[in-house]
Length: 440
Image (cartoon, rainbow, N blue to C red; front, side, top):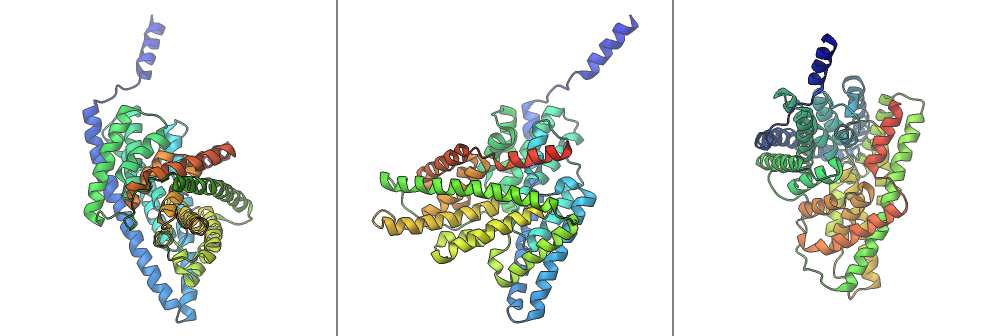
C-alpha cells in the first residue's frame, strides 16, 4: 500500500503545471515588451553615442599620429574587457546569443541567468562601440529573452508558458533593434520556434508592439534607412533581373556562412587566450576606424550609402571582401555582438553591384540601383539564415519600401534556392551545432 501511495505521489509531482489563461499570458507579454523595449532601446542609444564618439575620434586621428594610436589601443582594450567579462561572468553572452535562445526553445539548453543581461549590454557597447563589425540585434534578442524568462519565473509560470514568454521577449528584442515590430513577431514563429503556436504568436505580437512603443518613445519612430520613393515595377523583365540578383546573393551568402565558420575554427586552434585574441582583433578594428572609419561598426553607413548609390563600383569588391573577413574575425573575438546588421550591409553591397551591372546590360529596364540594394539585403539574409519571411518583412520595415514586395519575393526565392541546393546549413543552426559538439 505504501509503495502504491508513494508511486502516486511521484506521479503527482511529475505532472506538468497547467498553463495560464491566454489573457494572463498576453498581459504578461505586454510587460515583457515594455521591459525589453526599455532595455534594448537603451542599448541602441548607447551604441549610437559610442558611434558618435568613435567618429569624432577618427576625425582627430586624421590630423595626428598619437590620436590614431589611441584608437588602436582603445579598440584593443575595449574588446579585451568585453571578452574578459564574458568569460568570467557570463560565458553564454559570447557572440550573437540567438543560437542559445533557439536551443532553449528546443529544449536543448537551460535559459541564461539574469546576470547575462548586464554583461551582454556593457560588453556589446564596448565591442561594437570600439569598432568591431557586429550587429546590435543578437544582444537585443538574448537580453529580451533573458529578461522575459526572469519575469516568467518571478510570477511562477509553468515551463511551457515561460518558453512562450521567452520567445516573445526575443522577438521584442529584435523588433527594438531594427524598429521592426512585424519582423520581430515573425522571427519568433519562423526562426526561433519553427511552427505556428497561437499562444506564442499572441505573446510575440503583444511583446513586439509594447517594445516598439517604448523604444519609439525613447528614440523616435523613423525607419533605419532613408529610401527615396520608387514606383512599382510591374514589368516581367526587371523581375528576371531581381531573380538573378537573388541567385548571385544566395551564392555569396554561402560564402559568408562558410567564411564565418572557418574563421571560428581557425581562431579556436590559435595558441592564445580568448582575451588576447579579442585584443588583437579589437586593435585591428581600431586600425580600421583610424584609416576608414565608416567601414567599421555594424555597417549601417555602408547600407545607407549603397541605397543612395554614392559608392563607386570600383571599390565594391574591396569593400565586400574587407567587411566579409573583418566581420568573421569580429565574431571570432567571442564578445557580444550579432550578425544581422553586418549581413545586411554585405547584401546591400552585392545588390548595388548587381544594379550597376544590370544598368550597363539593360539600361532601358533599369532606372535606378536602389531596388537591387533592397533585394540584395533581403536575399543575403534569406540565404544565410534561411528565414525568408523574416528577411522580407524586416527589410520592408527598415526601408519603408513596401512597393518592392515582388522583387523581394523573387530575390529571396532565388537566394534560398541556391543556398539549399548547395546543401548549406542555416547559419544559426550551424552555430548551435558547434556549441553542442563542444559541450560533448
